[in-house]
Image 1 (tube, protein in one colour):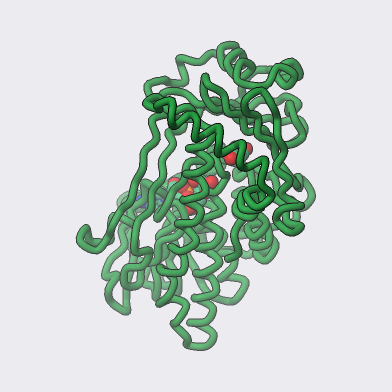
Image 2 (cartoon, rainbow, N blue to C red):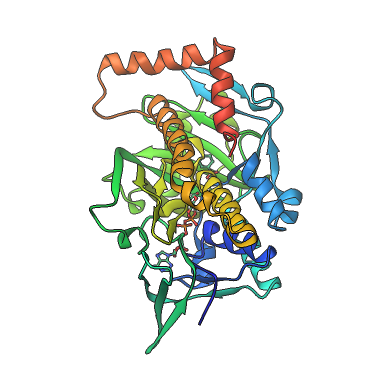
Length: 390
Ligand code: APR
Ligand code: PHB
């Protein structure tokens, strides 16, 4: 097989890039290790920054998002017995975020790829990139007993944190930066009316909690839990009781509980791999960097990678100009690190750290007190939350 751009990974990053390039006449093949049902069964976060929503529209995938997604102009932070609102619209110069589940977004991207007869190969086993430093790289994968070879100009590593692409960069070239937090988030999805029309991030001495939503009939809640906990330790009743303890009394009184549709624990981690280019391999999204979910930056840091790569590929194929490709790693990492800083800051300010000393707790309280007493601080939060410019 032959293609121009071989994309490893059929998550949001890989599908979005494939769709954008196809619309400009650039041929791609997407190789996904899992089945489509498996990919669409994963429950992920649900806040899209303004720039990502724009990219969905440019990819001609924004129709359902615009119809069913909710525009949020602000969110709430509960702390020290009070609830303060961050006015995103006011402090970001009129911008906002879209609340739309990543699972639905991935479904829309698959539907668009199908409409255009895009090539997405599922259940691709043993995917392996080769000859990445040469002008003629190729990727192999196994389908049953058959090994298939795909020759291409470029390989995109959009295969998430556990993918094969990053591992193909030699150890003496790749530098990894990692911070593991001493807790995870236990998440519950329930077919219940959300407790609040806007997201509530709650700081509480028993641990952080978040009230989020997918629609007016579908709620997503999280509580901070120790890394040693497992889903089996948490019955639905125990989850709801603990969530209520961490919310302000009037919010807890309004909470509608119900059976969980999905329940999972995700550890919190910050990670960046540098460089994001090795020869003709380009890393994008979770393959190169991950953030703790606190600032809702996961998908959104992937968005800027895709934006930069898309424009770099266009300039290369349409004008023979490879400057964008040469600058990709540096440019992408500059924005990636800002998203890292923001998610680390939100995480540090709002969680209960098992080893924190009284001094640390005072600083957390002061961070929040400063935030809500300073328009400049709220402006800074808002501009990061709606997404820094690409
Ligand atoms: N070969 C082929 N595909 C692979 C391989 C492999 N060796 N390893 C992983 N994959 C696939 C995974 O099955 C997954 O579908 O690559 C895809 C990567 O998708 P994601 O993990 O969703 O990563 P990405 O597309 O970069 O999405 C960005 O935003 O909200 C965040 O972390 C969240 O996943 C989300 C991310
Ligand atoms: C979610 O809805 O899953 C969600 C929302 C905001 C976050 C993290 C997760 O910061």
